[in-house]
Structures are given as structure tokens and as C-alpha cells.
Image (cartoon, rainbow, N blue to C red; front, side, top):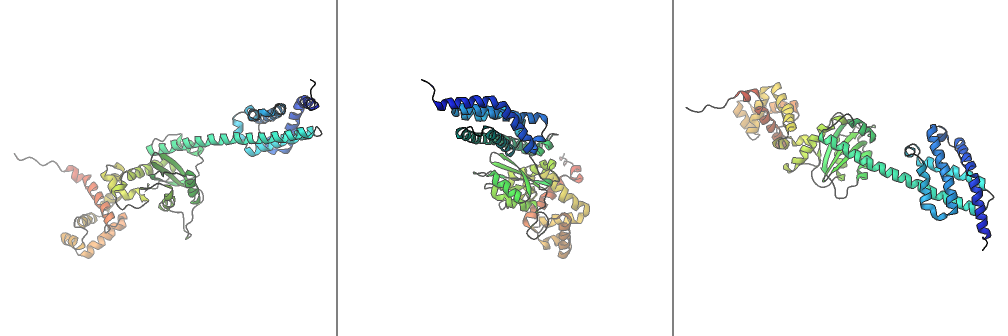
Length: 404
């Protein structure tokens, strides 16, 4: 049975397309150089790789025109000709510009060969555009998974304090925009954790965050962004406590502990250790606010054996008071031992109650804690106990002799 005229026309068209495929590729490269400035500025090796993609596209179209059912694998195969690094140097927008230039050149060369061929070019260009979007979407997904793993590794290094020379480069690879002071916020992971919403909230607050999910525990490393955040009253940057309050809805139920502020991200391990220690004992403070600062949990942390809390209490409270005046230490001891009674303290020290008031005011000025409040009184009394245990006089005190 002789071939039908339509089949003969298609066979002739295919033969003609195969003959001019080389000329089409050359004309396409010339069009790219003339119309796309970014292509002309590329290194020779990458220009060659882009040319391979264009050549593969033309060859693939001829195969597709012969067998339209091959679309799924032929369209994707175009990008297999490009080296992997080309995806990182050529954007999706530039790839679509490449497809458009190739289609325009092909349409110009095949003009007058019939509407069937022109329609085939349009259909195929659509398939190639979808294939390009799929390639870039997969690359973005793989990059996102890699970024998530790298972020988890960085947060874990900060929590464990196992920092090394590679930590700054890993942080830079994550696109960290924070600068200056940093604090670590520890809470519980919500049942439906929306990490994107948490990042959007952080951006609105002008801060950058590193997020680590460790089972039921959610950890945020918070750093100030380049642009300062202004309060509604027009003041300076938001305090980290205020930032933690704004981020609080992104955490699950339970305690939320903010570590102390440190000068830079490389020092975030200090804030993390305090925040984790505070998170472990926060339930011991019945009316702890949310969020609560790790330094407000110093007594509980010290009772749990946290050496950092013990050192902080002694260095921030006991030693400054002792260095300033022994009378302040004595008055504070007496005031706390007498149930915070001014009259009982005055009687024990043989001074006027106003003198006790004055000394307690001086205590507050020296260390920043007010002994008249019940919570701060606990902090001060714990520091006095720890400081007394560590004094030279206590260490020189020997064991009582047994009676002979």
C-alpha cells in the first residue's frame, strides 16, 4: 500500500529538519550572543555548555516531531547535556530566555513549511518550559533539604559547644544576615510546626534565626539583622526579651527560656548552655513567666548542679557586695535570715531601721537585685550561700576534733 500524502510530507519535513539542524544551532548561538548580554559575559566553558543545551533542544524537537509520544523523556533529556554546575550559574529566568531565543530562530527558519510544523514547535516549547521548571524545582528542593541539614548541624554544634574552624563558613553558607549580639531561645516544638511562619515573624522583627528541632525541643538562635529595629515609641532596637515574646506563638505549650545575650554568633554556645539548663528546671518555678530569662532561674539551676549558674551567682552578687562593703553582706544576710523584716534586722545589728533601708538600697544599686522582693530574695540568698561556701575562711575551717 503506497504511503499517504500526509505521511510523505512529514517524512520530507523530517529529512529537511535533520539537514538544517546544524545551521539552526549556529543561528541560535548567534542570536544568544546578540540578544542576551548575560550569555556574552559568561566564561567560554559555560557558553559552550549553554550551546550544548540549545543543540540538544533542537535535536530533541526533531525526535519529538517524529514521535510526539516521547515527550516525557525527551524534554527532560535536554538538560542532561548540561553540567550540574550550570544550574547554579544560570537562573530559571535565563533558561526561559534561552528557550524563547531557540524557538524564535526555529520559527523563522521553518516559516512557510506549514501550520502543522509551527504548531508542533509551540507545543514542544511548552513541554520544554515545563521540563525546565521541573529541573529547577528539583534542584531547589535538594538545596532546601541540604540547607535544613546544614542548619541542624550548626545548631547542634552551638548547643554542644563543639565549634571548630568550619563553623563560620557553614553559617555563611546558610546566608546568615545577623550581626552583633545573639541569644538562644529554647522551648517545646508545637504539634503543627510552621517553620516558614516563624521565619516570616523573625524577618518582620528585623532578626535572623537559626532553627533546630530536637524531638520535642525547639531551639532558636536569634541574631539582630543589619537594619535596626525601632519600637513603636521610636526608641532603639528591641530587647531580646521583647523579640522572644513576639516569637512565642511559634512554640508549643510549656516553658520558654531565653539565654543571656552574647556578643557574637561564635559565642552562642554560652547562651545555649544557660538556656538549656534553665529549660530543664523551669518547672521548679511555679509562676515562671513565658518567656523567662535563664538568669532568672539561677537558684533552680544552681540547686540542679549547674556550675555556670553557681559561678554567675557568686561573681555577679556575692563578690561585688563583698568587695564594696562587708556591712552590705552582713545586712543582707541578716535581713534574709529574719524573714525580710526591717525591725528584726535593725535589732540584730543594733542600728536604726532607716540604716537597714539605706544599706538595702545600696545593695540594689551595686548588684541590680532588690532584696525586698520574694523572688529576688531567693536569688540573693542562694548567692550568699554559694559565696560563703567558697570563701577562704570557710576553706580554712578544719574538722572539729573528737573528744579524747
